[in-house]
Amino acid sequence: MHRLETFSSKEWLEHIRNAKPDTREDISKNVGGWSLLWNQIEDWWERWATEHPDEPAPLRALLSALREGVPKIRIENGMERGERHLKWSYPPEIWPGHDERWRRGAIILQLGELVAEVDGEPPTAGEEWVGEREHIESYLVEFVGPNEAAKGVKKQGPEEMSREDHAGKALEHLASLDIATAYACAEMDAEEDRDWLKETVADVARIAFYAGRHTQAAWGKEFEPLAATREISLHAWAIGNEGRAKSNKRTAALAAAQREHAEKVIALATREMTDSARADFILTHWSKVGTAGERPPPFEKKKTIQNWLSTRKKASHPVGGRETK
View 1 (spheres, one colour):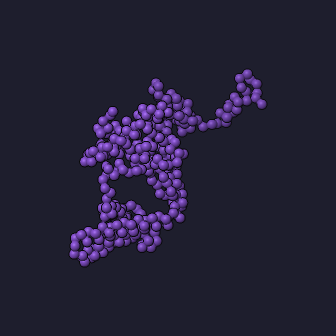
View 2 (cartoon, rainbow, N blue to C red):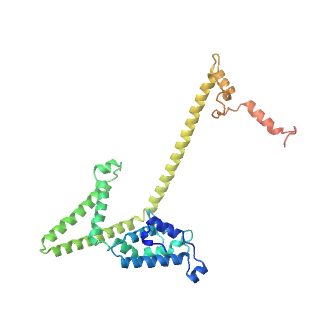
View 3 (cartoon, helix red, strand yellow):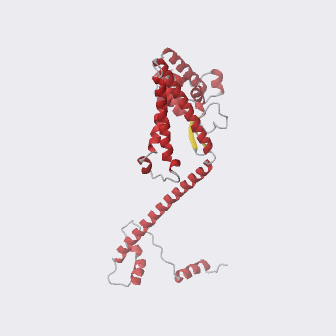
């Protein structure tokens, strides 16, 4: 039996990935396969959590392996995109194509008991709001003043409808929460009451913020098809530009190589020539320049009446001399 408490996250991944699929014999005799492995893992981590509550490191390694190993799916709706782990309860048609040996691992993640053992008690509303507010304000600050101008965002229409103005007003509303909370706390004598009020305000602020966010997202769904179409068009335009740039670069490089080769060819000439004579000389001696094993850059001769007649004659009189019909 492996000492599972010594496993690193990488070793957990390897241990689970090496498990063999269940067979009828495995299930009937309980001797191997995925099911036995997951039974052992579940028994181990629950026992470890009970007997070693102050040593969460082994459980953290297992949790990290589960978060990496359990398959994820990409979810999209309009302009909203995300990624989440497959759940064991998803219908059968979603799991095929994914590694089903992780299905029991998906159950552990979904139940959340291991997560609670590793991460501890969930944060209070106040603690969550402090972290989320810092994250929100960091974005809003980027949309205000010189930062916005540096991004080249054009202001269209009235100033009060610009992104910069919306961001500025949002920052003002957030600051007004602190002012209102401070005034209310000043009316209370007990520290316990002031802490209760701050926690309540944080809870209400967080709920109100997300209510507003989801309301705005619901309104925006009406226009998301237009935004998605524009995104696809811009992506196609960018790919087209990239392709044209690469083609132009290759064409320019080939033209430069041909000019350089032509200069080497004309250097073979021992007398002065007219422009037409120079061109004919280059065409005639094009393949005579270059070291052994080196092929000169391609040069396509312009078709003439003689070339066309010669090609036509070969096509009309194949081997044997009989004209084709």
